[in-house]
Amino acid sequence: MKPLFPNIEAYIKKLPKTHPVPAKRQLILKAIAEFIYKKQQKDELAELVFICTHNSRRSHLAQIWATIAIHYHGLENVICFSGGTEATAFHPNAITALERAGCMVDKTGGKNPVYLVKFADSHKGIQAFSKKYNDKYNPNKGFCAVMTCAEADDACPVVLGMEKRISLTYEDPKKADGQVNEGQVYDDRCAQIAMEMFFMVGQVSTFTFR
Image (cartoon, rainbow, N blue to C red; front, top):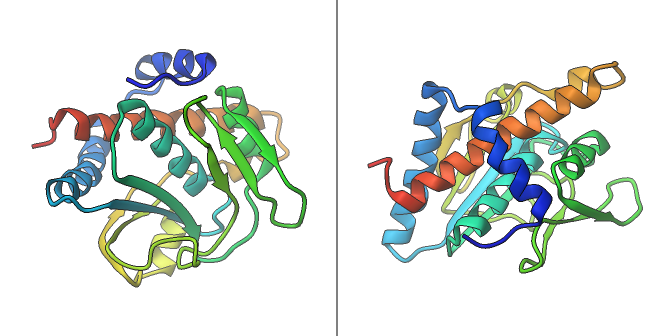
């Protein structure tokens, strides 16, 4: 295992007890793991594109936690991206949830800020900003499209260039914006996604999905 920031390592050690992965969702996550494993068996790059409507919350959280899990387990030739059916901005509430989980986040200014999310001294970090799924920064063929919200899944019946499409939807924490439970809702969604991404990557590492 490759070291992460101490606060993140402490955070992920608690996840199996606080946010266990239901059996039905394990099957979906194993399908993503199988995509990665088969790519590795062919010495091909495995690219995952996490997609939600605005690329503002769930798809970013999934991309970031999948990248953290991939780094932690030492997987090679696996790269994660995110995008939306439209571009808006990476929402501050999702960012603060990542910071509470132990990530370090720097940002530039602008209407659609670019954030650098750091989780380990040995990794350059993740450049995160809102974009469409078919943006030039994302792969255009041979990738696995992971649909993280039902709205994007319905609104995007065809994801051009994908090799595999998997629906892994999450409830939108946006519903809590401005409410007294805002922080808790975002923390719960962040933890759920973190646990599921670590479960998924763990399946590749141990080949237990076969």
